[in-house]
Length: 409
Image (cartoon, rainbow, N blue to C red):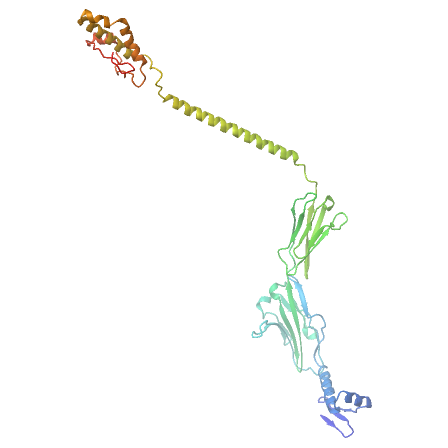
């Protein structure tokens, strides 16, 4: 009840206790209201609202003050703290309800566990069945906290604790994010481990919620990274440029995110490059010897092939300036010709005898021998001698001979 009197006083009656409160503005209050262009009635209304809110706060209250945004690693256990207090005016039955708020406003919330009628019911949500329960065996004592065990990545979401005891109602929300800790990374070195060369140390973790960060440390020697080392905290690499023997040692890579860390070690041994001059010289000599041997083999092969080809050409070549060798057939033919001439001479007159001298007989076989191979007589297949032909009853026939100029003798 709000009533303003003529003395600029406001009387307020509380709706529960029935007590009356009288507001009388002082001189300072009037000056402050005048500077804010606000009349006394409006100021009183605002003050009454504050009082009413303060009066309602005297009932059921959630007293937990911890963080409402929680990040946990998978496999761990989380406690969502929800402490409350009751007032004498909260006389209704106590009901506690934990629910999972949907990411889409059009979907319904999922009830997880409920405490009602002095009993706890913890099997409402199948994905969390057996992994969720109240932190206190008797939540009515003021502890409505909930524990979730064996966290999974799918447990990420917004959880709400609601406590009701008529006429008091209180609630609190939590944003739970389940992160995967990095898996054990793999460390190895790439490149030549010789002095003066560049090499790269690599570190990679297969699993882990992003963002992942990689940190390189040296565990031996002075434990300081080489001056020309360039680490990459995002890619997990570290370049060693123009490496020296002083860079040898053991290096550790730490993979970390907001919920955990893992590490691995890699051994680096920088040595002086070997002297390859002797090896290169030996390789060059072997290559030259192989080429020389190959050239000799090709030369011998080509020479043998040409020689064989030349011998074949000589075997089939016919030379006109060389007389053929003597044969039995030509000898027999000469004997036959001489016999036939003698028989002819017997039938001739003595006047013709001077034309057939010994020299003429001598010329007959010599003409045949001097004939070129193309005009030489073809031997008969039988190859029989003159006496054998006479015994067989053969008749000698005189065959005229022909000189080189074509005349018949």
